[in-house]
Length: 63
Image (cartoon, rainbow, N blue to C red):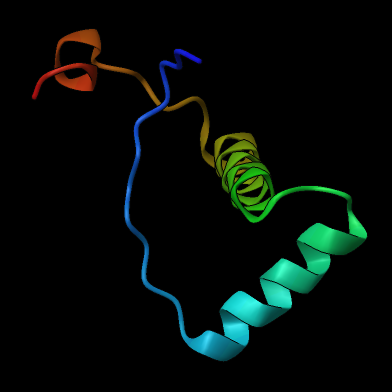
């Protein structure tokens, strides 16, 4: 299955990862989907307080 999502590696303290995994299970989400949801909520909250983050399309896909 093709995707346009970028794979990353994130390090967590074991207790925090366990707790997020429990929340994901309770929300019927995969761990990845829960982390993506939390990141989206963080950006939404930030932009609500500070205005939209401008996206540099050239930098976005630069390798």
